[in-house]
Length: 133
Image (cartoon, rainbow, N blue to C red; front, side, top):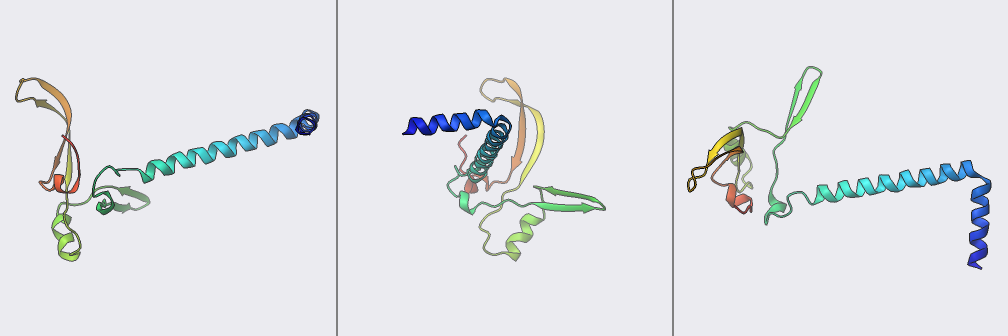
């Protein structure tokens, strides 16, 4: 019985090649789009979830508008670290980051120098983020 269905389907697909191509191409594009959306969504929901307090960590974003230019950037002014806890008492801790770029760093034990990215952070960094050194 199944053999008859398969033979009938193959005959119909061969008889109408153009519509078969359109249907298979549309199905392929649809499945590929669903997989891309799925991979993107899984990646977005897994971002920084390895921190033990990951559900309580938030990031400050700034929106800048200069005439017709519109920027959304992940930065803030240093004074915000003092103003936010005053205005929002539910904030437990604030960590500021400052990217200092690539600098030569010397290992104290071996006196070897290497060029590394250097980021300055507040002393509360390890209270908020669970990062292994």
